[in-house]
Length: 190
Image 1 (cartoon, one colour):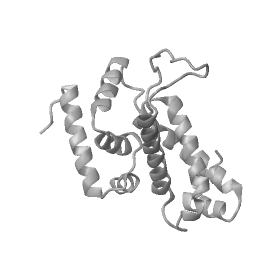
Image 2: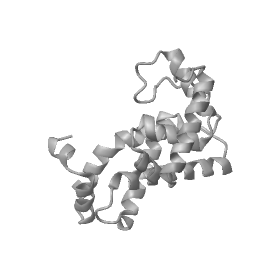
Image 3: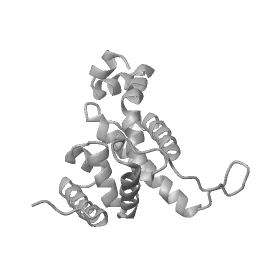
């Protein structure tokens, strides 16, 4: 990524894209894809699926570009599309729960060795325990924690992505933190 790409506001990249210049879309992709992939990895727990969902998200961004309000923040708009892509995937999987391999056979279960971004410092045991605990959380609480702590969005940005109020997001995150503390056996500091 060039220095110009890093300094160019996402909104400017989107404006260039809306004017028909594909380089704007390319810059959006380079800047947002790693964070979107991490966000989706946090939601689904599968790096391969996260990559597929990232690609599907950018396809939807391309298709929905005319719905973008010029000058509006790009990041919450794209993350909201990613979230809806994830929810669409969940709805599809509920309707079609089988997971066949390319040759039509049920695949063998394989352990996922890739750690979510930002957790490299944790031991493998601690990381496994954290992932198991996150998986046990209700989806809204897990989503709030991933948006805030894994992806580093502000409360306002995370609320926009989740399609809820900032207050509601804070409640979901707080309940998720409390459940994680209990699951991990962490005492609350006074």
